[in-house]
Image (cartoon, one colour):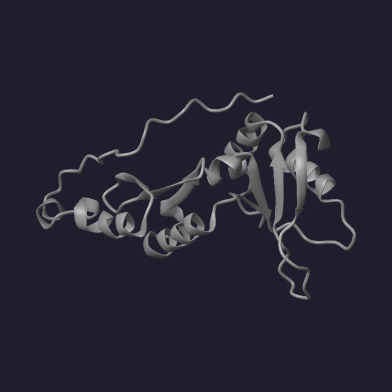
Amino acid sequence: MEMRGRRGILLLHGVPEEKDEDTAKVIVGVVKDRFRIHSFAEDDIKRCHRMGRSSSTTKPRPILFKLRDVAVRNNIWFEKTKLKGTGITVSEFLTKPRHDLFMAARKRFGVTKCWTRDGCIYVLAPNGSRHRVTSSTELSSILSRGGTKSPEAASTNAPQKPIITSRPKRAAAIKK
């Protein structure tokens, strides 16, 4: 239920912080410059602010922003690969238990083998199969239930066909 309320919220990490900044203008600038979504405006943002307290550390605080339309949120979410190499990232605003589970999955399987989509956590097992993870016991059981190649399969040169255990992909959001 709580994740449903967070559906339209994203976090923007790595944007330098300035004193007395207007975070809505910062978000609009990043979206227009990096994502090339030129129709995006401040009116598309319901609310936004920096997370946490201001401190003297050099690491900028993430910007939380809630969008009025989920379709606009999906356009930004699916274009996040355009941020590679910029030091800026976009992430979902997960609940504390889901965030902890996601961090544990990344630690165990690696950053490139774990991702989130619509508040759900997905893991790519060593054998290539995808798993939707909802608890730490499921995370632990991925390797024990066939997440690794068996010794027989490793000794043969025949490629193993991955088992897909997640739901089918949805059509990409329509770009404006």
